[in-house]
Image (cartoon, rainbow, N blue to C red; front, side):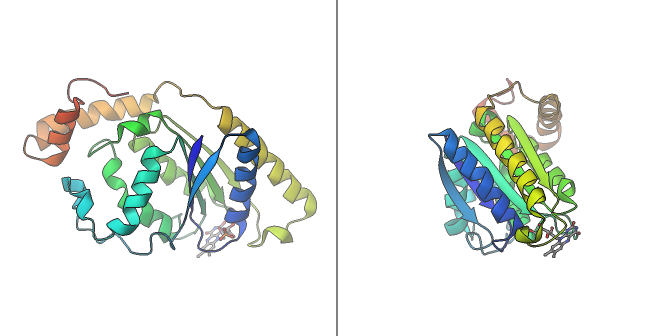
Amino acid sequence: MNIAVFHGSPREGNTYRATGIFMDELRKCGGVTFTEFRLPKDLPAFCTGCSLCLGGWRDKCPNARYSDPIVEAIQSADALVFAAPHYGACSMPGSMKNLFDHIDFMVLNVAPMPEMFEKKAFLITTGAGSTAVAKPMRSFLRHCGINRCYSIGIRMYTNAWDKMPAAKQARHELKLRKAARKFYRAKKGRPYLSTIFYYYIVKAITIRMIGEGHYAYDNWKAKGYLDKRPF
Ligand SMILES: Cc1cc2nc3c(=O)[nH]c(=O)nc-3n(C[C@H](O)[C@H](O)[C@H](O)COP(=O)(O)O)c2cc1C
């Protein structure tokens, strides 16, 4: 299993530590390789808003030298892991939001990647508001048509893992290892009802309001999505 991992905290703190435990357990399950990206280091430039990717010219993205390897890793991975701490201001660190901005063309209403319909994803979030950060991340991945998305929220109430009492550290570690084993075993499921519902809404909008000559319509038509649900 080839897993693309996105580390969303700029420091090697709680989230990095939690993700390390999760990855360690996956490694123990056997046959797992990781392609890791550290944010913002591996995507140090902001989306410029040029919208070229939304018009079918993704190769002309001004940040393609950073975003191309990321898109390729997502495409070829069997599974995806996104890890982010909760930042009170708008839930996720800017670097994770910047990653999502660079891959936003993958949403169902523009140019969904058929590979996404086969994949599973796991979200690791830390901080007291960890569910608040998982929510928009999960929603984005579902809009991309991800087959399964799981998550774990770790509330440490400290910005240093080692400052937690030993028993609490052990409890979190146990939870992460159990979640990793479950994620490893998770099989492809039926598409989410919400994704099916979203597909029909997007299809109606694409036909009635977007129309020929626009990338979203032409791409959907070329791939046969206007005729048949692709997942
Ligand atoms: C800019 C910033 C804003 C934060 N805002 C919140 C917050 O609103 N709620 C919360 O529970 N934790 C907040 N935190 C704490 C982190 O979510 C928490 O310590 C997290 O585990 C840090 O992850 P890291 O060590 O991987 O960077 C914030 C941290 C930073 C740096």
